Length: 236
Length: 215
Image (tube, rainbow over all chains, first blue to last red; front, side, top):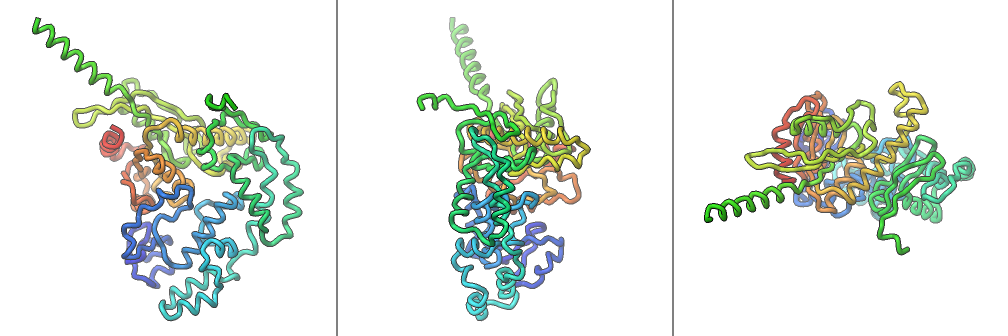
């Protein structure tokens, strides 16, 4: 029973086509994959707390690509587009980041086809090709949004450069994909614990908030905030 | 004389038991916004304290709780023994706060922006408490919503990495669309207890588990 509906618990055989249009019992559209050899692997999340939600093991490439894309997206920018719900993790995976994360996913659709045609049935092969197909991917959905993020303020000493945000967004709109330096900048941004996107709009980096010893006690609209410094910092 | 000695030793024994029991465990109630954390905190306090003061106001508007609120020394009796806990009701943890969300609830823009700022400070405070100040966690989830979220996974992961005892509660089982199984599947490494904090359903089992996990 490799697939199990996460809503009602109904199970499906590997490659079952029943679940392609949702669970026949409850209409749920989330399934977890449970290979018989991996029953004991139900508790790995404790080893990597900051990772995105993927508690059960799922061996299908479709799911792997989705997870990988989520992992990279979470790593690169916790919110590529502000209104997007967090749990939407499989509908718009970015091809390039996914490839770098998994290795296998970057072989392209032909490679996957050749590799899987013999060992798997149509449903699985179809699932693989559909997910990696470029037709279904929005053209570079994340780059412009994330590139415009560095301007807002975070650390306690800055003078909120919110005015520069539009410029940054303008120049980056023409680029399709992030180059390495952009990625690095975005990763560096992750060390910020609170971003002020606009007055009243905030993005929070929970891991960073959890990790920092000082305690944020008051935010101001210009992006400054007041912190309480631990006593043991007094020497430095 | 012998009587006096006996009396003294029994007083000493009683005193040591008393002091041992007085060490309250500080239990943080965590979870995403609108999961019912304050409703649960209020129910615990009303069930186990004489005056039954509320911990804080409950609301269907997200981020009603924007400061961690603590109620100390709640004594819960289970099977003849007692468990003392301090309950800390924390603001809902999220990765995004947007004032426009509050405008839908008939709020003026200025109020919405202020609420948003305070909510953000509240999340920072909640994360700080998690790092420094809690001995155990009650993690409250709304069983009518999808538990597979980045926030839930990250918080449960942090709690696990700290080796804190954690009790996962599937709240709002009085609602038709509630699915406890979905939460069990999301966190199979933990026990999930169903309840309705609003209606008081299954609170006996919740108190049993609080005594078992945090006693």
